[in-house]
Amino acid sequence: MNDLEIIALFEQRKEEAVAAAARKYGGYCQTIAQNLLGIEDAEECVSDTWLAAWNRIPPARPASLRAFLGGITRTLSISRFRSLHAQKRGAGLTLMLSELEDCLPDPKGVEEAVETRALARLLSDWLRGLPREDRVLFLRRYWYGVTVKQLAGEAGCTENQMAQHMRKLRQALRGKLEQEGIAI
Image 1 (cartoon, rainbow, N blue to C red):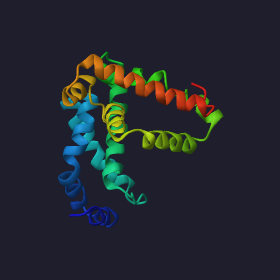
Image 2: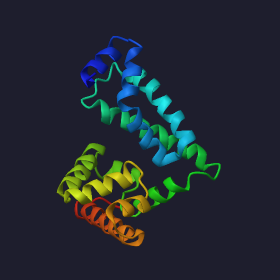
Image 3: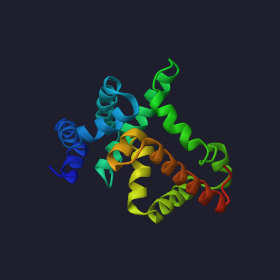
């Protein structure tokens, strides 16, 4: 079943929409949640994804169902992480987010400096300007939450080499944001 058919089922409020979305994108959403949380908590977030999609379609009519569901899963996973973090669990996401701290502006500063859409456009343009390999690495690390160790293993380099490469990418992002006048 293609995405338009699944979206149409959601719009018609047919329960088979959830089953079709789960069949097509369940593994994808599970991977996102699992990279951020771990297996047990990931399953709960993926289940919550289907409910959130049911509640959001309509009125939303996503251009990309995959991205829409992935975004919901990621948001739910980060919320779940924050809840768990208060209980001293989830060190993997803490590390990933702390790596980005030094190259992203404070949310309050962003509101004063530029609109959120302008920042998103700037980030998208920066990502598009990267070589494909770097763009994929950056997104896998900071969107999908893949560990540096796993990225290094897949790239055939050491963990330290990959960590240094990711640091250079973050520095490049920070430089681009500062060049555009965004306070970090």
